Picture (cartoon, helix red, strand yellow):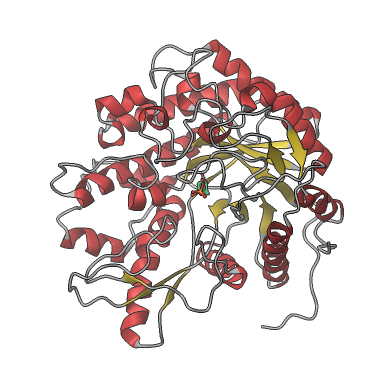
Length: 471
Ligand code: BGP
């Protein structure tokens, strides 16, 4: 639809940006923090360890002040489970409780609403050693962690996100360093059993949030990318439906309706991988409801029919989520440009994704990640000319405005990332922030903060509530 009459964004639109604990904080094995699976994994070759990152642990006041200067209405950050509970359960680390309490206070001082992710790829290593999410106990362990967060921060935090990209944990966990499938006989059985426990943990945490904090709002934060068919061949349409169900809808159907998606159920049955479900699980999930949907969007995915022959996938990355013989096969969309790191760029697909989520679930939505990773360069006079990032963000914000004009309820926009941090698997040199951190992959330099061109641009965007997107 070509829109000539645009609606303004809601006045209380939550402009902000995101980070995650293990990628931004540093101080990963100090101040009482226990190791998480991120701290014990082997980092990808040529990339930095996660011991310093952007050193947000020591710079949070300065960083949040810069966010305040940009006019942020919200800041999405995650709480490291093993900073609060070094062993994942049991003794609480008071220093960890105090750290996030200070971060929250600092946000409020700047007029910034904290948006807290409870779990972002960093399961405590002590729990992983015992079997992690594959054990039934993991459900109560997560709920216990959630309860501690509500008790300590519920007086100040109104917006909560449960699990970051649970779908990516299930689909490409090996790629993001959160699971090891070596020697596992039926990977689907293992992954979807873990997934079931996470879904149940999420449902219980949402219910507990509503019981303990009646004024708070809580939602999931999967990575949702509409899946296109490679052509209008009917079989390609079926393949796109398959992958849409496996990649996207299963997670939201479960969070919102408490129902397993029928296509995914069949897929699991075909692989002898139906999860063990205990009596009462489905009732718990059906009774829990999110108040909104948070979702990360980087680009769409495209698939074609796969007749089951084993062939090499032509295109695969963190976003694509792999190929499944007989179900779908990834396809490189020839219509889309790429970032320097090979990720597709698709602002129209962003609007298509917002429309589709809204038409399925009719809940308000907040974008919890979206952004462009690039090799930014600091000039001699302390500038970072990241016009490519401005262009990327502008084109995505335009689509939010169009979606809102079409009646989609959007609550906010939190691009990735507020500040430069360590990429999930491509190191420090893949930068996403509005704020530049002066360090290289291995040389920590002085860690000074610089405002990128996108910093000033985003400030104006926020000031005008998205009306002025010009340079
Ligand atoms: C998402 C994760 C983030 C972040 C982002 C960018 O999947 O939730 O933690 O890393 O992707 O990815 P990358 O760092 O690989 O460029």
